[in-house]
Each structure stands twice: as structure tokens, then as C-alpha cells.
Length: 123
Image: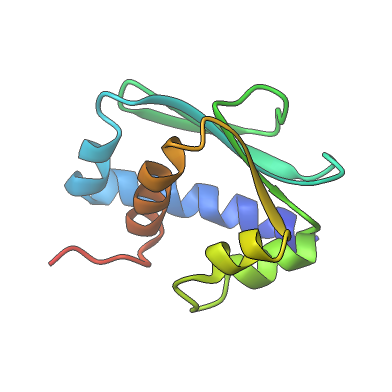
């Protein structure tokens, strides 16, 4: 349940930052990606759709360019809400997180995710 609520909050936060922060809007201007965060059982998650400067989100978990597949919702919630800057790397090393699809998008998405959620700050 916490994971599902977190995905909703992240979606709202990204939409807010896209409205208020030009540098975040600029990051998606020419991008066309679909990224999913979901649990391994495929029952919970969220798809983030970026198309030519527009952002949307839905619950379709089967169509993606990159997917972050978490062992379970509790693990995902713990890692995504922690202050550990290498938390996702540790989750991958511990097999709590698996990436599927075009993994080269992960670096761009993590920067976008960081700026869009306010974790990363522009100097």
C-alpha cells in the first residue's frame, strides 16, 4: 500500500516541478521514453510517459522502454524514501531491484527523477 501511494505522490511531485521549474521542463523537451516502476509480481506500479515535452502517468506495466522491477513494495518504499545516495545501487547488488529494457536510459531517468522530486538541486 505504501508503495502505491508513493508512486502517486511521485507522479504529482513530477507534475508540480514540471510546472514550476524550467530546467526540469527542459530535460524532457525532446525525450520520448516510457519508464515503469513496479513490483516483481506485477500487481503494483506506475508507468511514467515522457513524449515531446509532455509528462503523463498510468498503471499499464507491460509497455516500457525501461522498467525498475522491485522485489516487493516494502523494499521499494524503503529505498526510494531513504537519504542514501547509493540506495538503488545497493538494491541492485542485493537483487532487490532488477532493471529490464534499455538500461542506458537509467542514468538520464535518475537525474530527471532527482531534479523532478527535489532530491537534486541546481546550483
